Image 1 (cartoon, rainbow, N blue to C red):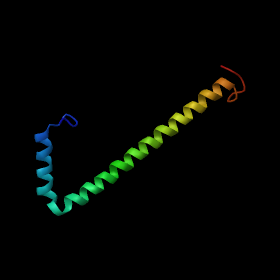
Image 2 (image 1 turned 135 degrees about the vertical axis):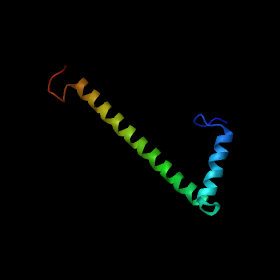
Image 3 (image 1 turned 180 degrees about the vertical axis):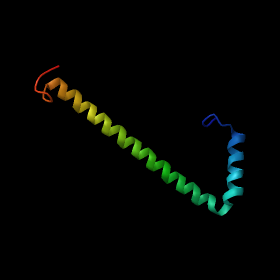
Image 4 (image 1 turned 90 degrees about the horizontal axis):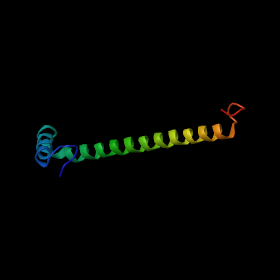
Length: 73
């Protein structure tokens, strides 16, 4: 397993340190919060990409139709 160039032993070490620092009871809540944050970031990124793509398509269409400036470039 190779996640972000981190091997299995490194991931296990990070999890062990997290359990020691946060405590085993709070790990589940921490994981849940991290999952929500990642989901929000992913959705925001997708929305931003969609908006930029839409704007670029509208700009290309306007250039082709010549409606934006009233004349073609």
